[in-house]
Amino acid sequence: GAVVSQHPSRVICKSGTSVKIECRSLDFQATTMFWYRQFPKQSLMLMATSNEGSKATYEQGVEKDKFLINHASLTLSTLTVTSAHPEDSSFYICSARGAGDGNEKLFFGSGTQLSVL
Amino acid sequence: DAKTTQPPSMDCAEGRAANLPCNHSTISGNEYVYWYRQIHSQGPQYIIHGLKNNETNEMASLIITEDRKSSTLILPHATLRDTAVYYCIVTSGTYKYIFGTGTRLKVLA
Image 1 (cartoon, helix red, strand yellow):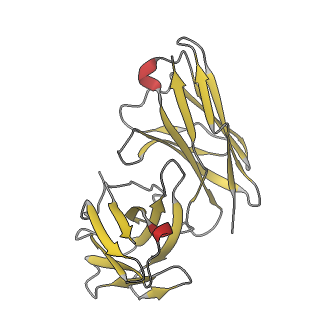
Image 2 (tube, each protein chain N blue to C red; image 1 turned 90 degrees about the vertical axis):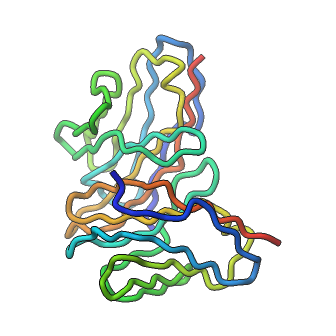
């Protein structure tokens, strides 16, 4: 099956620094990628949708200047948490969907655990 | 908001069938039902999906009621490795997957 690679799997950073998370589709071209965050014992919360070559669409309540998303190619999307603070500590998960009729299943990365000190 | 409702938790004996229900009473005609599961600290794993017919693959079976307002995921012979949170998602060409609270399945030895 299709594989989505997410890197790094875990990152610890100091408050005020920026952290970049990469999401790659390894064996298919992902026209659309999604970014989620998940707090302990809670469900996944959709943060934003990114389409290759265009600006990301953010969900209500998600700060676009805080969470910068770039989807510059059909196989790579990045999420940058800018000026991270302890409240940004969370599990971040990306997912990707290939091109098609719109009902292709999503493939998820393995997630990135971000801890901000 | 998620368009699905699932029981928060279920237990199942190892080797027995696990039947996980999902209500999606507001599903529209072009929306599919997807099932994923998430094992602790990993990304969700695809299990199965369907539109209106029952579906079966190597992992599970999906039974969708005739009115499509509910569905059941069946793991025919649950093992300890099936312990996970199972999510039922209804989506269409909007491309968004909105996760509900899911069902925490615990398979007991």
